[in-house]
Image 1 (cartoon, helix red, strand yellow):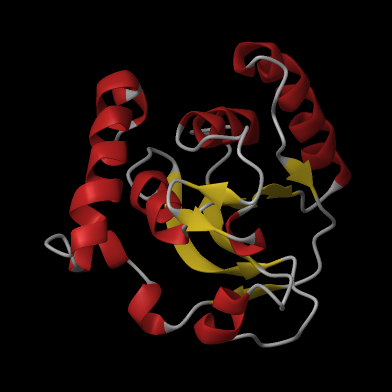
Image 2: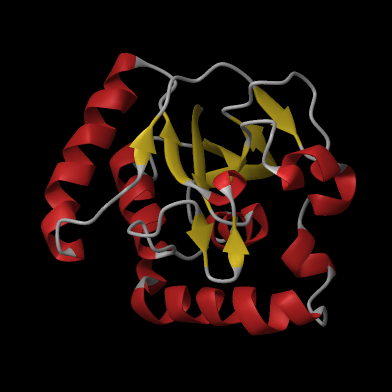
Length: 173
């Protein structure tokens, strides 16, 4: 099994989509890129921890490649927005890839270069060195599926999931 760590806005949105993809075994919401150890959600929300809301994806490379995961990642958030996604604003919502090895770093740079023209040359997604991934509190895990009637889930996550299903159905479990 391989792992990927990605951040692109609220981790609930990324988790809701990646967990529906063939070849993905698990998705954990958490924090990466932190300057402070063992952050909690309230600290991350202040923006002073340096953390990004991120997901740790455990996947089977025989069923889906890291490159395919990155292409999905770029399709489910706006990589041209600096430190924000929709109404979520702050460095904790930045678009960032945390490669876990040199090969992932090379692939990430390749995908950004390949997709940047499709985004008007405005991709702001960064590639940051991986240090530590901190699992978010239990109530953040599997949030969309356990809180489907919650306002954010209905207004923000559900439309993203539906859009993904419509355009990327071949990847669905």
